[in-house]
Length: 277
Image 1 (cartoon, rainbow, N blue to C red):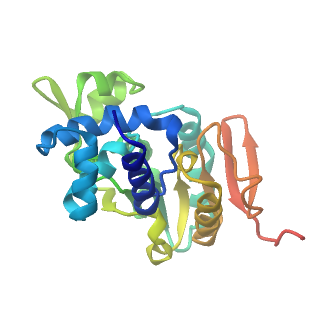
Image 2 (tube, rainbow, N blue to C red):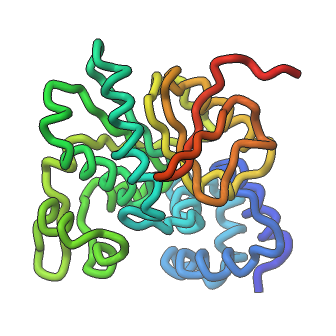
């Protein structure tokens, strides 16, 4: 049984290092996700793992613990609607608005094992001639090293490609490798993967036309959500679009966004006129 002292230490560590806000109701997550790490590292229990981490704040071991606690639930074309909106409305609008500079920057924050940025890249590849002579870039970031390594490899199991990925995309954009499937280079080349902790700030990344941060902020406390959400607004272009998870909203957190609802789905744009107090 994990002691309260160990739980408090791990809750504090995870909140400080990753923004993950846990309490005693999530003890089962600590037990199920960290017990394999403890055994792998040669500790009899999670309590022993915690004591060792207190005495020896080794960054590699801390990173393993953080990786294990991250919820890497994702799939290709997850929830569908945001990608329909991106392809059918957002990208065409950006092609008109950015005609002079012919550049579009997209960021997926909390990209996990890569299905979201690769979905976006496949949609862009499918648009083909319309994007010729354009500088298109997708930045994909995550805090979990293990998830990023898998994302960079771009190799997925049969189960993973069956979750939401249309067969036409599978045959066009993947090569089969025995029982696995590898993303083709034409899709990979549009995506840059990078490790990033949202808590550390991200203004240095520059300005983006589209930001996806779906089902990431739900694990943060209220103050952290405010700080990060307002930073997203600061680096979104004037005509840019922000995507959240289906059950998420910026309202009640920040007044810097306006909800845009279309037949194809919902997104948010940065307010160009400051909200009145």
